[in-house]
Length: 137
Image (cartoon, rainbow, N blue to C red; front, side):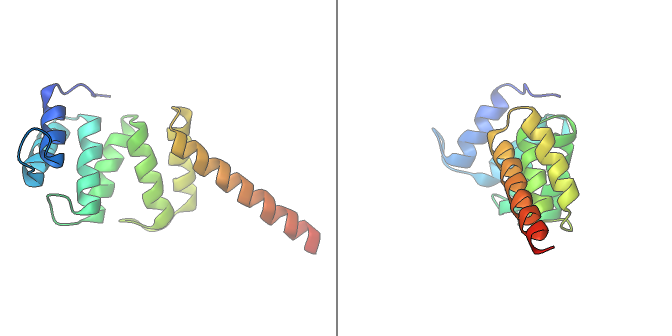
Protein backbone atom coordinates (compact mmCIF):
# COMPACT_ATOMS: atom_id res chain seq x y z
CA UNK A 1 0.00 0.00 0.00
CA UNK A 2 1.42 3.34 -0.99
CA UNK A 3 0.84 5.66 1.95
CA UNK A 4 3.70 8.15 2.04
CA UNK A 5 3.05 10.98 -0.31
CA UNK A 6 5.08 13.64 1.41
CA UNK A 7 4.04 17.25 1.63
CA UNK A 8 1.12 16.73 -0.71
CA UNK A 9 -0.89 15.27 2.18
CA UNK A 10 -0.33 18.37 4.24
CA UNK A 11 -1.06 20.63 1.29
CA UNK A 12 -4.33 18.86 0.50
CA UNK A 13 -5.54 19.02 4.06
CA UNK A 14 -4.50 22.66 4.38
CA UNK A 15 -6.38 23.65 1.24
CA UNK A 16 -9.42 21.60 2.21
CA UNK A 17 -9.62 23.11 5.70
CA UNK A 18 -8.11 26.55 5.07
CA UNK A 19 -5.22 25.89 7.46
CA UNK A 20 -2.45 28.41 6.84
CA UNK A 21 -3.76 29.08 3.34
CA UNK A 22 -6.97 30.37 1.85
CA UNK A 23 -9.51 27.54 1.83
CA UNK A 24 -9.71 26.09 -1.66
CA UNK A 25 -11.54 22.78 -1.83
CA UNK A 26 -11.09 22.49 -5.61
CA UNK A 27 -7.31 22.82 -5.18
CA UNK A 28 -7.41 20.15 -2.44
CA UNK A 29 -9.29 17.80 -4.76
CA UNK A 30 -6.81 18.49 -7.55
CA UNK A 31 -3.93 17.53 -5.26
CA UNK A 32 -5.77 14.47 -3.87
CA UNK A 33 -6.47 13.34 -7.43
CA UNK A 34 -2.83 13.63 -8.51
CA UNK A 35 -1.71 11.52 -5.56
CA UNK A 36 -4.64 9.09 -5.91
CA UNK A 37 -3.82 8.45 -9.57
CA UNK A 38 -0.27 7.58 -8.49
CA UNK A 39 -1.72 4.88 -6.25
CA UNK A 40 -1.57 6.51 -2.81
CA UNK A 41 -4.28 4.85 -0.73
CA UNK A 42 -4.79 7.71 1.73
CA UNK A 43 -5.31 10.12 -1.17
CA UNK A 44 -7.71 7.70 -2.85
CA UNK A 45 -9.73 7.50 0.34
CA UNK A 46 -9.75 11.28 0.77
CA UNK A 47 -10.80 11.75 -2.84
CA UNK A 48 -13.63 9.27 -2.28
CA UNK A 49 -14.72 11.32 0.73
CA UNK A 50 -14.76 14.47 -1.39
CA UNK A 51 -16.90 12.81 -4.07
CA UNK A 52 -19.26 11.29 -1.51
CA UNK A 53 -19.84 14.64 0.18
CA UNK A 54 -19.49 17.05 -2.74
CA UNK A 55 -16.39 18.73 -1.31
CA UNK A 56 -14.62 20.63 -4.09
CA UNK A 57 -16.36 18.52 -6.74
CA UNK A 58 -19.89 17.72 -7.79
CA UNK A 59 -21.26 15.03 -5.50
CA UNK A 60 -20.90 11.62 -7.15
CA UNK A 61 -21.46 8.65 -4.86
CA UNK A 62 -20.48 6.10 -7.53
CA UNK A 63 -17.09 7.77 -8.02
CA UNK A 64 -16.71 7.86 -4.25
CA UNK A 65 -17.18 4.09 -4.11
CA UNK A 66 -14.66 3.61 -6.94
CA UNK A 67 -11.99 5.55 -5.04
CA UNK A 68 -12.81 3.93 -1.70
CA UNK A 69 -12.53 0.52 -3.34
CA UNK A 70 -9.11 1.29 -4.83
CA UNK A 71 -7.80 2.34 -1.43
CA UNK A 72 -9.58 -0.49 0.41
CA UNK A 73 -8.06 -3.11 -1.88
CA UNK A 74 -4.63 -1.75 -0.96
CA UNK A 75 -5.41 -2.36 2.71
CA UNK A 76 -6.38 1.15 3.83
CA UNK A 77 -8.54 0.50 6.93
CA UNK A 78 -10.30 3.87 6.75
CA UNK A 79 -11.29 3.21 3.13
CA UNK A 80 -12.40 -0.32 4.01
CA UNK A 81 -14.67 1.15 6.67
CA UNK A 82 -16.01 3.82 4.29
CA UNK A 83 -16.67 1.20 1.62
CA UNK A 84 -18.46 -1.01 4.16
CA UNK A 85 -20.74 1.88 5.12
CA UNK A 86 -21.52 2.47 1.43
CA UNK A 87 -22.55 -1.17 1.02
CA UNK A 88 -24.51 -1.05 4.26
CA UNK A 89 -26.45 2.09 3.33
CA UNK A 90 -26.60 1.67 -0.44
CA UNK A 91 -24.54 4.79 -1.08
CA UNK A 92 -23.25 4.68 -4.64
CA UNK A 93 -23.83 0.92 -4.78
CA UNK A 94 -26.69 -1.46 -4.27
CA UNK A 95 -27.13 -2.38 -0.60
CA UNK A 96 -25.27 -5.58 0.17
CA UNK A 97 -25.06 -6.69 3.81
CA UNK A 98 -22.59 -9.46 3.01
CA UNK A 99 -20.13 -7.09 1.34
CA UNK A 100 -20.61 -4.58 4.15
CA UNK A 101 -19.70 -7.20 6.75
CA UNK A 102 -16.71 -8.34 4.67
CA UNK A 103 -15.28 -4.82 4.52
CA UNK A 104 -16.12 -4.08 8.17
CA UNK A 105 -14.20 -7.26 9.08
CA UNK A 106 -11.17 -6.27 7.01
CA UNK A 107 -11.07 -2.84 8.66
CA UNK A 108 -11.70 -4.30 12.12
CA UNK A 109 -8.81 -6.75 11.69
CA UNK A 110 -6.54 -3.74 11.32
CA UNK A 111 -7.87 -2.22 14.54
CA UNK A 112 -10.35 0.26 13.05
CA UNK A 113 -12.47 1.00 16.15
CA UNK A 114 -15.64 2.09 14.34
CA UNK A 115 -15.58 -1.05 12.20
CA UNK A 116 -15.19 -3.15 15.33
CA UNK A 117 -18.18 -1.39 16.94
CA UNK A 118 -20.29 -1.93 13.82
CA UNK A 119 -19.54 -5.65 13.86
CA UNK A 120 -20.30 -5.86 17.57
CA UNK A 121 -23.63 -4.07 17.01
CA UNK A 122 -24.52 -6.42 14.16
CA UNK A 123 -23.68 -9.42 16.34
CA UNK A 124 -25.82 -8.08 19.19
CA UNK A 125 -28.78 -7.50 16.89
CA UNK A 126 -28.39 -10.98 15.41
CA UNK A 127 -28.39 -12.51 18.91
CA UNK A 128 -31.56 -10.62 19.86
CA UNK A 129 -33.34 -11.67 16.66
CA UNK A 130 -32.23 -15.27 17.10
CA UNK A 131 -33.45 -15.25 20.71
CA UNK A 132 -36.91 -14.00 19.74
CA UNK A 133 -37.23 -16.32 16.75
CA UNK A 134 -36.49 -19.33 18.96
CA UNK A 135 -38.86 -18.00 21.60
CA UNK A 136 -41.67 -17.69 19.05
CA UNK A 137 -41.02 -21.16 17.63
